[in-house]
Length: 328
Figure 1 (cartoon, rainbow, N blue to C red):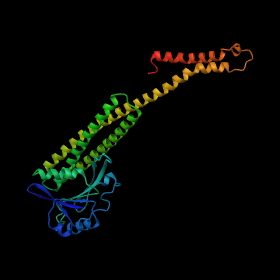
Figure 2: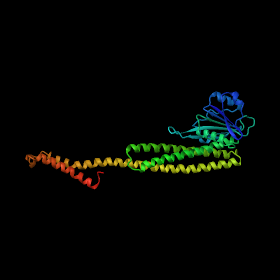
Figure 3: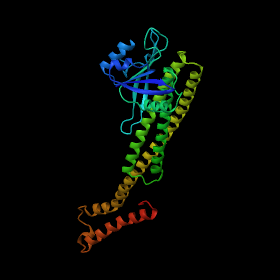
Figure 4: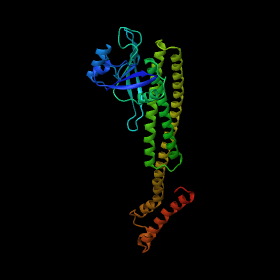
């Protein structure tokens, strides 16, 4: 899918392009390619003279090779954007290409973004740009606002994680955590821990991208200050993710503690049963010995006497354990 965004009266307007002829009619500041086809890549090549690298969305690119400037003046930035999906939270690699200086190319002043699937941050920026005149001034502003929206999206996701952990905390700290509930709690904690880790990695990646933009000297003074504010926001997100990791570890330990308590209760039952059955076993063993002279063997009440003795020897420890509160 090929979408272009033009700037008119301070607002960002979107157009979906279905042919090369349509592409030539507009002067966009942002060209967004979502899962582009070979034909759409060819349109970009023919009209803008821009060749999209084959490894633009490759996940295996080294970190040091994700931010660089070509000899022709093109800035290349590859950054990950978070998708907070309940079923499958993940990060999407997005490749940005921006030519700010080479006037020989039609791509000058146009931001190109390439990605495999729809990114919530992009939708958020498009919505804001349509409603807020003057939010976007040029292609650099689009890129900077995308990273700003990414940091805010991560903050919103962190708040959702905190709400989920609060609900889990109430279940754990309420006590009486059964093994079934403990399993559900551990699964919920594991999901939030994974998402929190993805957020931390995402904001670290955003920090690197914004820092690269600041080092490349492509920003004016106002944009440079905005970039510094984004870095400060990311720093606060780092602290919050660290707090959530501590909370997750506490809830994990507490849940595992309740599981151990439940296991100890089961072991205690078996231990009490073993101790209670030890005296009857001893009595049965004594009367099971084949000695010739045993007075009770010729006694007519010997059998019921032995049974009563074994029953009393079993009930005695049980009564003692119950009195001490060990059977609760």
